[in-house]
Length: 300
Image (cartoon, rainbow, N blue to C red; front, side, top):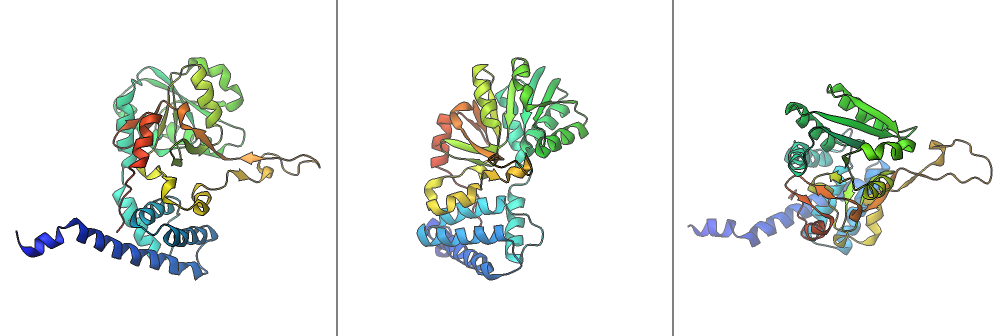
């Protein structure tokens, strides 16, 4: 083996190259903070990146942060630096939802079962598409609230695939739970003890535990967030605010009435039967070890 190959194959050299690329990429991103064309949400994320670099200056923290940064970014009208990162990011994770669907399909016999859905998730929709290809017989119930645009959107997507969907309002959940065989949820973020998802999932999972109904959360490893990598000051930026304007559910409420609208929530992992990722499934206890060893896609 040549000396040149020994040097270039050396993991220390590869790490040094990755570090140089990481520094260059991070500097290019941070320089966008003063660009008046970027949105306030992107600017907040870039400020968070600057904080990560200042307080947790290592390639794992930076890489992990950028992973979550790109998950939240709309590719439309972005500066070229962000667009290039997004292209690489999406190419590396293309069709990951199908892989997650395959793993889920191995974990449970969905034939002749009644499945309850909540929210809107691509992994769940890919799983239903897989069942259709396999010509399985199953029943879908989509849970929605009165102003639930997200749940209605998922019901439409599934129906357009030629799959019949029964839609019920969340207030009638108790009536239907005894008929449910399994519940499927999506999520935004998975952490050691809790996961972030559409509001209402906590009550669904708690009720399912009483009826001994398995609850699966479908996602991929990009959604894993190990808070140990980040300063506390940037965690809230990554998770996002749970509360939105109360006008969403009661516009111009009378005096002395406080209206609180939580659109997302943290749900205890212990209420979940299995977390399904693109390579394997985990119980809540097994998931802790997975998160401790998290390795997200290296962008550098």
